[in-house]
Image (tube, rainbow, N blue to C red; front, side, top):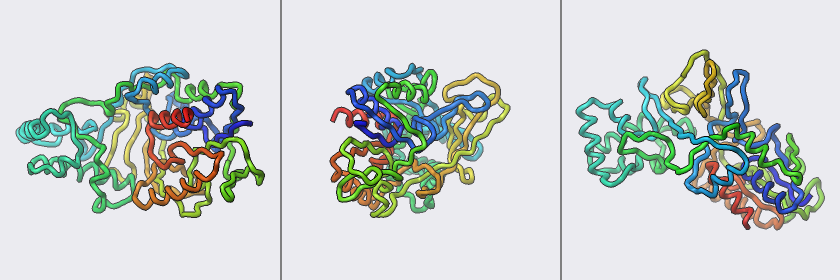
Length: 376
């Protein structure tokens, strides 16, 4: 073995393929019983292709990243649409002029749309923070309406804090559109696999120099002492790529890094359609944040519909939960920096990935990060 990789998600798998193509013998340890990390999908008992860990759509503005994905699977163009429901009414997200028409009287809606176009002339969108701070009282009132009915209750459930203490600055990446344009992403390339994400991983990992061991708890075998990486008590000289949670690698000596986790409630109904878009947020619903209808992700022409209801909850190590979203605060970033400094003292250790980097990556960002590690 020339290289041990901990984790069979996108980062670990891309690095494994690179090393294998360099003639290195690579072993991957994965604690789950499947490859593909959070991108893993499978066909359920009703015949629908579903994603076990929530919805994933590959999207990027970079041709080289799209070309890389095309090496290992065929892709079909797919423009994701999302929405939100409150007071029994549906609106597309990101919020657009349809939102205004849906929730405001006709005359008020016409006036508000004209004001937004004038106030943000030459722009297609702005953040809700900008509109919350705008001098025009009608524009501010619109932003406040959206904040109170969607952003605040949704974020409160997602992150486990009360709406009163939500800082609007966390919403700066969420745009409001000044048109009737729909579609969640603006990237040049937006696609879903023709077969499955799992097929992509099968092809990516199909190399004679790659060996995969599933159900392997790496932290039962790996240990770091005095800047040295030990495997079952013995010094290691080969390269180790670690994609798991960094605090857990170091036994939580600086405390547990904060994550949010998710619980999925899987359901099937004998109806042609459950909701207006594949992914819909329900900010007023009790407990859950959104529903993903997999019949529409991508379009699957079968009887009935399979969907997952998403419940956020706090992550605690040892409870068989997945750490999905790093809770990024000044304190948690400082805490992570301490762990990262420890990792950098280990010469044959590379830490890479959503958990190891303590960042929330989209697929294209994770791929770019892995390819950067390969180049270096």
